[in-house]
Image 1 (cartoon, helix red, strand yellow):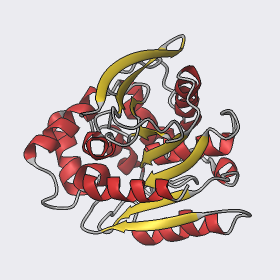
Image 2: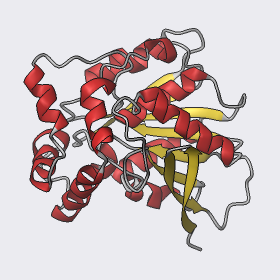
Image 3: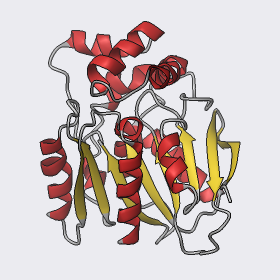
Length: 284
């Protein structure tokens, strides 16, 4: 039988209501299987992981989250209210309100940085967070653009469909991986984001240093790196994420290279991403 699907909105603070896309397997009575929570990239929504979720949903409960200001989620009309820790607080609130007992976070790009922050904050009930799948994650340390004009260009990257589609084609994806329909859907998500959500990541989110939280990660991690990702290249994923976690006391991280993929790994290679996540969960 097909998984049960639903959507809902959850209030997590006075001016933040989070859009959730939910699935639940109908033929799996195992109470110990984790719920998979998917956190999208800057410009995405709960729809970013749809094709990955389609493969995994017969086996696991899944929760696709539209982060504050993205998708149909609301966010404060305040420029500084979209920090990594603000997003982390929202996700923690969702987990607590849903009374989830076992969770694996799957975070892509910005969503990966948020996932690392949640793991390092240790604010969830003990034992709830079982592992992290970091898909082309943004690094925990600050990223500074060498030229101020590059920041301005990023701030306006999602102003309109033309800019958004150009960003997808020239920066975010490898040639030939995405159909015109997928590009249009992704661009619509980008343009739909509220002005402060679009502004925050290039203005200060990339520079947000959560190394102090990254250093406190104490659960298993798998890192997925796109072979042709020019934003978060494989070598950086090895040295800055996998190797640093493995150098920690009790650190446990592995790396999966997704051949042929650019930065939009969940959209470009969803079956490979689903397979890697499933294999990772079997090791927990």
